[in-house]
Image (cartoon, rainbow, N blue to C red; front, side, top):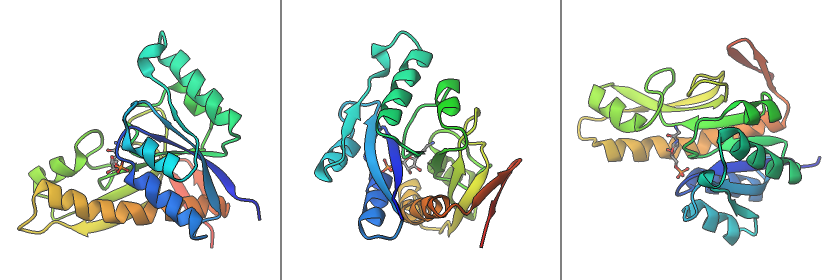
Length: 203
Ligand code: GAR
């Protein structure tokens, strides 16, 4: 079976990228990362890609006249590498119409909270400050709003009395590294069917 070609968009440290690369290398997912694109020149994720001989490309938002032009470029690079699915892994930009139309129902994101709770930035700290007993993470398909698309997988973690926002974030991150590769595996196996807001998983 041929491997699903993944393009990963990043902005920062890239630990989810690393989990996806590792799962591919170990043969746990029938997929390979063929290109990594960052909107930040010094993202550590780019170094991780290079260390794994994966093309690591910086595309600076400020080098384009607007979001449409910027996304046209990002989509063109992804197409050049014949990417079949785009994974946002700590990519801190809201996608616009050009990207969504270039990869319809083929863009996933990981979010460090149990959506629809705590969408947007600093989700772990906001969950901790709110005093929830459980939080977690969500892999979902991306739509035109922020963190609202159909949910593929979630993992739950407890919030402990002695937690800080940082220890909670670390507990959530551990689960992120499991459910992102798991969601990609389901997609690669053609087992995800989107119907309205819902994602059905075929046996
Ligand atoms: C992860 O916790 C991811 O869920 C979060 O950024 C972190 C990136 O870490 N994403 C968002 O908050 C998106 N709204 P990583 O670069 O080590 O994968």
